[in-house]
Length: 266
Image (cartoon, rainbow, N blue to C red; front, side, top):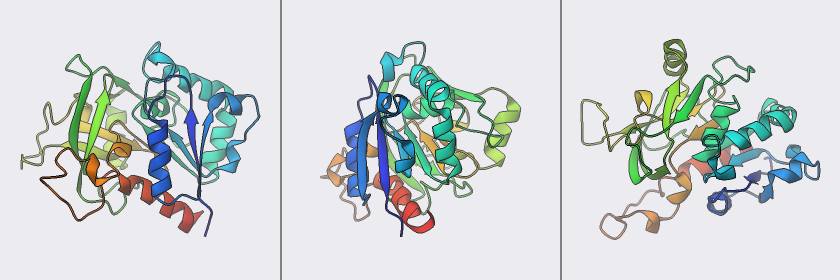
């Protein structure tokens, strides 16, 4: 079995990195390092030492220009060869909230044309016009190849915290491909509405097709706006004293799936 080595990338303004480190530690990773992007740009550290790359939530570089754009440009124009080699080696990439924005804006997601680094979708301001901080229900797409969501419960409960979370595709053609090829790994859902209609606040941002998370065609690159690292202990649940659960905390499945995949397949 492979040794699971996780890199949680740091940059100015990222503020969910320690939670991501902790999530992978309790998910069973053998090594979890927490290193600033400048170390890789300067060549002091090599991405090839790791088999899971994590881009955490926060406000990288103050979200100047737009959410995640500056860090996306750093990765695309200074480290793209290293990132491409990492992906081509069959390794995993996870982007959470700001990290999802980064993956979208550097062209790693959704990649409707494998290997083509072109931005085909973006994450825009919430329809509500304000920062949304609330717990949401997510529905897993059973037809998605996403490594991170395999064998999860059909519906999970995790928090969101963002002002720019609305997923928009550049065209109807791209949106159709996202649906048909299984790129949509997670959708916001209203568990109390049997007809499947999802409106605010169940969908906190107004994403097209209620998209909460996307993967590439391999299922190995995955990004989502909600924060699974904020529901990895039972006591994280806002109603944990009134609604005890025998199953694992919902966010933990995503991290355990990643660790298990590396052990079994890399």
